Amino acid sequence: MPIYEFKCQDCGRLTSVFVKTMDASYQAQCQHCGGRKLERVVSRFAYRKSDETILEEYGSEPRRLEDYKDPRQIGRWVERKFSEQGLEMPEETRKMIDAAREGDLPSPLKDS
Image 1: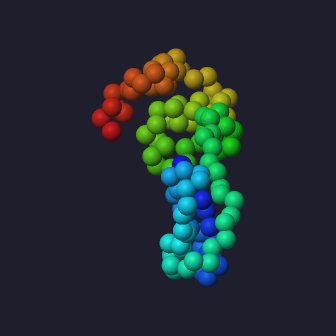
Image 2 (image 1 turned 90 degrees about the vertical axis):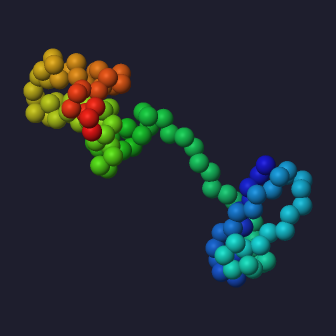
């Protein structure tokens, strides 16, 4: 079930047309202005990034408020801060981070 994309020659915007089969006939019309002078374009594509690729591209620093709700982000941030300061992470902190990564959140986080 292909999706074809067209550029409207009247308004210049893209229109997507869903077709049931590759050999089915269809009539494309601009979704924005109703124009019929459309030129087929090469569609964009998407791919899934692995967690490793995301960390390589964006780092482990939380970027949005929602990121602070993710115990993996919090743990990475804490680990990085201890490392930057040249400090040894307390064993209790290490256990809390490891437990959070396994899904067992510390009591203060469970309530939030």
